[in-house]
Length: 98
Image (tube, rainbow, N blue to C red; front, side):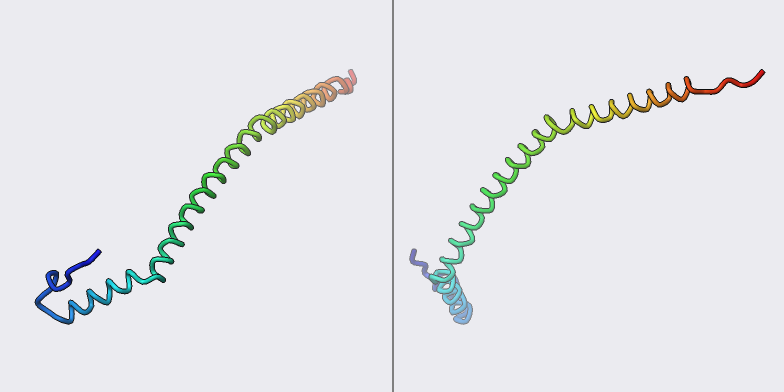
């Protein structure tokens, strides 16, 4: 793309020189390569984030399916043991002498 810099700023030659230098720098191969690399890094980051969120979803689902029922069953077992201990303590009380 050819830009007519003189038509953009005909008032000050220093500004014209700065615009040309800026344009030359922005069109250099290093800048273009860095922009392409940054764009590719962004794509890779998005893919990594997407796959990480998939793994997190699978992990959460697995936890809900496997671990939560186990936790509930362990809690029930603990409550049942507590009730049994209370019953044994009630039955093993010694009668008070009359």
